[in-house]
Length: 546
Ligand code: NA7
Image (cartoon, rainbow, N blue to C red; front, side):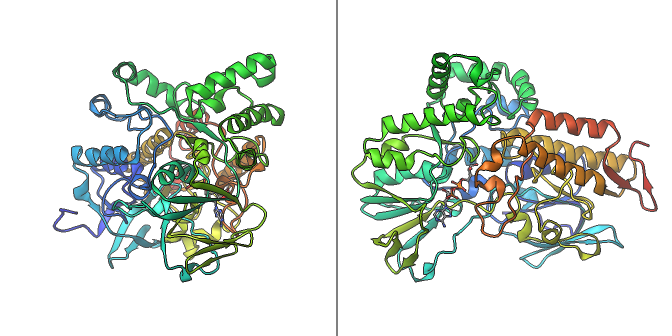
């Protein structure tokens, strides 16, 4: 799909990924006259929304807020059909953006970056791809997202299975007809919860294998109304500005009072109102739900009550009601008819919390000592999040140090943007930044703007290399953990903690101090001459502010 006749082998910046952040980064850098190469493993743009094509895939951030804010004409003209966008609509948006800004011609599709090595002598990165290309770049930018490497569990006998297997994070492009089939879904995170109602309506029989129940709130998704769209479009600039400094990077989220500052009756009314509003608003019912265990329990119990009201079979309702971790500490799911699906005759829930699925057989699987037969198995088993995709590339910094080795006990970054010993390597929404703990759209744009400003600053000051100081990095790593440890998040075995991948270090990876707080820290860092970063010219380190 690339239209370029001769692609340059030496550029200012190599960007990996043509999703939300990669496209914006290309647009900005190209507009500023930086030469770029963009590599994308898919055959078109869209990133997450290119790969996650499973039935029911939908964004759980509202459409008006999950889009680019950097082009007013774009945000005014684009029409989202629903309050929460379905995957095909988001993909259509990215396709439109790619056409509108003529981005595809500068992207190499179907190309995977295999290695990126920093050459100390040349002070440049050498990047290799699976198509055999070798490119030299001053800057190497990973715009590969946080959940882009699918996690396929290592269950005995997987290769013996004769039926069809699917992973929600790597779904085929053609429509799969499940009519008349007996299907298994393994996993009940967001992807499982979104796909289960649709698959159940289509299949002859659906069996859900649940290891840990997730808390889920109804999305209350509706078609976009002209009034709602107009209200947003009229106030886009003010609302986007507010989102940038909001805790979760979204507009209108929290009720700034504590749980026990109101009576039990008032509390219930607030929960009910927010439950009816739908979506993540529920977690914004009070300002202490994620830091105070007793406060959290009131919201958790309210949710369990809703499950018991909806699900007719009491035993199934109890299995679906989460009790082992605080609400919100594994990512809250947002659903359409998830719990109602368990009232269908053709749906069965199997609890595998006590003992794992024993093995996959030629025609199904064995769990809890029972033999199940399936035509298809759907793995909704999540991702090797935050670091998995970074580690898939053989990234080596100074003295051949592998990123994987430097991060063997957990990611080490300054601001989630850079890591010491890896000069001029930027990670967009990298571990140690708010990323998945807020509206990704807001955080991605902030990082792209930050990185772009760094490149402009370096060009203007004749600087070649940028790298965090070890001390600043150590302090930031400690800050990220300290902030997380002041919340209830470390209580859950979540992918935020790396707990879903056997052997992965267990520590909280995103910065949970708030999108707005983080932005202010970044602004201060820049105002103080890139505090905590070392910027080098060819011969000597110079103060960036000079
Ligand atoms: P998640 O949220 O990581 O969910 C994966 C699910 O798969 C979760 O219920 C896991 O149980 C389950 N799982 C994983 N491995 C196994 C095995 N071996 N056996 C049984 N069950 C298993 O991934 P999603 O794709 O749903 O969502 C990822 C993000 O995408 C989401 O948070 C949004 O940000 C969008 P566990 O809970 O680990 O016990």
